[in-house]
Structure formats: structure tokens, C-alpha cells
Length: 349
Ligand SMILES: Cc1cc2nc3c(=O)[nH]c(=O)nc-3n(C[C@H](O)[C@H](O)[C@H](O)COP(=O)(O)O)c2cc1C
Image 1: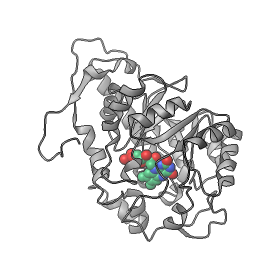
Image 2: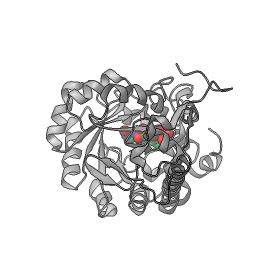
Image 3: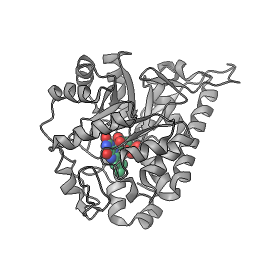
């Protein structure tokens, strides 16, 4: 990845390796970025775009725009303000934030920093299930509106960067904050989780449940049959299984399989407002933004994250105008197609 050397200096090589790295040879990490370039726009002309509507609906609630902050662990290691800084940036830009189970700030503190803004909670199921169930109870108590169960992390991906990183802030899994390696933390995930467990967590939470990390249409259908409210099509930012499909490439078959049955979100490599427009044109209701906004936080604290989110939304607005599609809800597949084969881009497999 280029253009990140300042972050390596800022965070140090171990934390930087943990945040920036991906699995294996990092082919998927790179392809997540390249994938958006494989879709070309087909703009309409002579459409009145004087007033634009960027809004979308998630879980039945209207949202100002479709940019959502992805759940990301250990944010105090990216910037001292951590999840509080991220929550402030999300609130300032009307962005929904998904708080990670591996948060370095407590759920009530993040809830307080979010004010009136919506927030969702991402759940990892740990071997010590009581820790996960306690997080679910806290999410419910402190006004998190949905539970995003991450299903692509039975074990950690084979990661070759960041092995020296130590988490030194208190976590739900490690309330004392005694330094832990990511290997120790990843070892606490429960690899025995199955479809049979979904219902129990939905019931405990009494909140809408989304699953995050689905790439196959048959799994998407299974999730819908299991009663989920939404699906996040994701390869976990290229951090789990290298050479999986990019989220945007996996999205189309998922949309074809489940249609409008549930809310669909997609992530991986979103860095520009036109990526957001492509995701919606291909059938998503919203996108999650991961490292791009994390780098904003690392570089400039809450104001840095806010600037990243604001620019994404403004770029999305400009894109709608230039596409001749003033209402984001009218984006459809007529606005995009696959680029003809391009040099230096591996063929879609
Ligand atoms: C440093 C880092 C930590 C992450 N932690 C979590 C996590 O705790 N839970 C989770 O479901 N996903 C986690 N993810 C994955 C993100 O939610 C998201 O799927 C991914 O970052 C999207 O790709 P992008 O970074 O290219 O935008 C993490 C990603 C990064 C980069």
C-alpha cells in the first residue's frame, strides 16, 4: 500500500503493521482497492440535479447518507482519543458508527459521546461466551440499535505483519489491560460458532441482527432464512482469507440471490464517494468504511476522521450530480458496468 509511510512513523511499525496489514500475500487487501476501478459509470445528461437526496434507509430508519464507520478494534492505539474520537467524527457527519467488540473504550462512554446519533454494536463470539453475552447486554442497555455479528473470524487470518503489536488498553476480554499480543487475543475467538447459534444472540439482544463477513449467495440466503435484518458483504478488509473475492465483486451475486429481502451493506477498500455510488448502483443500501477513516483518526484525531467522512459524503453528492441521478435511491445497475479488460488488473475469477 502506498502513501502510508507517515502512518508507519506515527504509529510505529508494529501497530501500523496490525492496522494496515492483510492476510497472506495481501492480494485481497490490494484487490479490495482495485475492485472499485473495475466498474465504469454510465452517466445520464440533461437531468435536473439542482437538489440532491443522498439518503438511504437502514433497518427501517432513514439515514442522511450511506457512509457507515466499520467496526475496528483497538482504536486508542491509532489515536489517543480512540473510539470517542471516532464517535465524535461520526456524529458530526451524521454517519452511523459500528463499535467493535474489541473496543478500547467502554460501551457507555461511546454511547455518551455519540449523543443522539445512532450506533450499532459489532459482536465477536468468544470462547468465554459470558463475555460476549455481557457485551450484548451492555449494547442493549446503552442504546445500540443493532447487533452486527461477525461470522468470518472463526480463527485469525494468516497475517505476516504486526506480530510485535501489544494491546495495552483494557478490553472486555482483558479488563486489566495487561499487555496482550494479538495472537493471544485472536485465540479467544470461538471457532465452533454455527448457524444454530445466531438465534440465541438475537434473542439475548432483542435487537435486529446483521451478519458481517458473508461472501457466498447461498450463505446470504441462509442468513435471510435465519431471520437476520441485514448482511454485510465483506472479506474483513483482506485480513482473513487471502485471495477471496473483493466485497464489491461478491455483492452482485448476493443481491441476485436475496434481492430486497434484507438490508445489504458492503465493505473493503472504500476510499472515494464514487465507490459509494457504485456500491449502491450494484444493489447495496450502504457501505462500511474501514482503514480510510482510521487513517483520518490516526493523522488528525476526531477532526481528521471527520474530514475523511465529510469528503466521502461530498464526493458522493458530486457523483450523484454528475451521474444525472439526483436521488441516491434511484441508483441502479444501468449506471455501472464492468470496465473492459484493463492492463495490470487481474481478471475477475
Ligand atoms: C485495524 C482493523 C481492525 C478491525 N477490527 C474489526 C473488528 O473488531 N470487528 C470486525 O467485525 N471487523 C473488523 N475489521 C474489519 C472492518 O470492519 C472492515 O470489514 C474492513 O476494515 C473494511 O475494509 P477497509 O479497511 O479496506 O475499508 C477491522 C479492520 C481493520 C483494518
